[in-house]
Length: 379
Image (cartoon, rainbow, N blue to C red; front, top):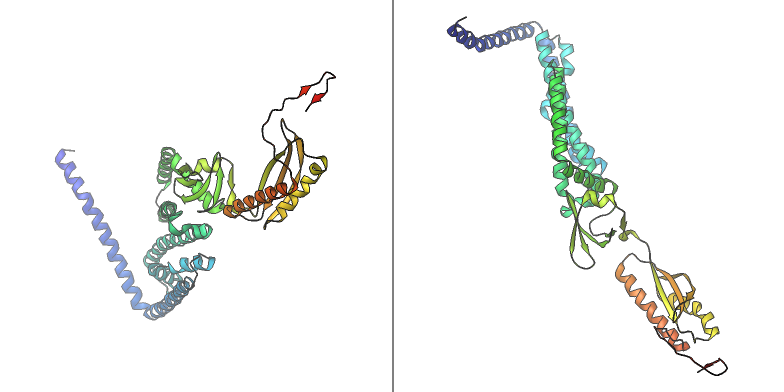
């Protein structure tokens, strides 16, 4: 075949395709015209029933919109369901109504195939919309108040994008498969592309999934006092990749979400009490009866302060220059300022008690004893 003939054949292919499509459209038009001429009554009844179905579905959508109202700002399950129903599209209602009534209207094969294809596309896209609203609503429900003031809002935007892409990709594959298209190559391509993206951005995805773990498991919230590794402070912001902690010494510490959850984390904001331990040393010259009474004195000092409960107290050993006692007590509060003030009051009560009883606190000293001719110490 010459080059001129090849170009001519190539030029005629689009024209043949257009002619085939035009011919199919003419045949479908003739079928519709013939069907309407012989079954106009069934067509009218089917149209009326279809319109009634659409009206019912519109009423259900309005009901779903009303379920979303009147909430106190939190995302409850009725809000999630209502929001999903409210996202029902008109094209899906029309396609569903047509699919339900076409069997009773004796529609020709051409019209039936068109209705089936339209319903398949509309149902897949509508199911993706419903699934997206339910998944995102569930995420917001689990996040509760953490979505406020940008605490985890940056992560929600990425989650919305990923969920939308995944659901509509699945819907597109299902549509093509139901329309007779071979989707094996497409699925393989999507799988390979997903693996490549996952490997390239595995660090970002690890922190993103750690942020999701924070949303669902709620080990801490913004404003909680936490202890992590050698750091203690309050959580200022939970972001997409990192969490910012304001340490008790004033600096801001930025920790990746994955690293934060990989180590032991202490949430100090969810305590119903805080335990305090005081080590007390008195001089060796303290009379024996006073030594025996010191635990009771310490107990009375703790009980004189509000919110304080003694855990245990007693003598723990003999120091280099002191008789050592230990006092453990709980302060029934999770607010550290209250705990700090209570510990101060307990210390002051101990000072007052020891001063009244003439008991002296020990401090590092060295005493020299002089021995007499008989070997006994001379004071």
